[in-house]
Image (cartoon, rainbow, N blue to C red):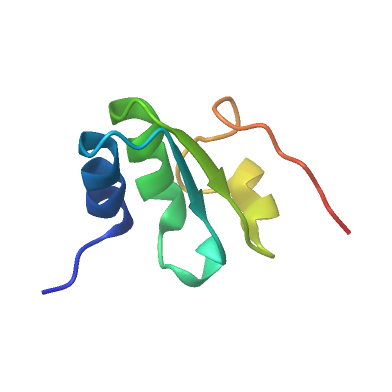
Length: 73
């Protein structure tokens, strides 16, 4: 049985986790929507990395006001 990123983040939070780091997030379909859910519903900080994460500013879920982007060359 597979689970989505939100379910993993929720379990992490319930176990007392505070900072969740997700690498290569762009490989997960509709990652923007689940990131928005995590931000809105969980009391954790999320660090996400991915080569197309920069497109978050123009994504399906409005995360532009919820994120701080750092561009690393």
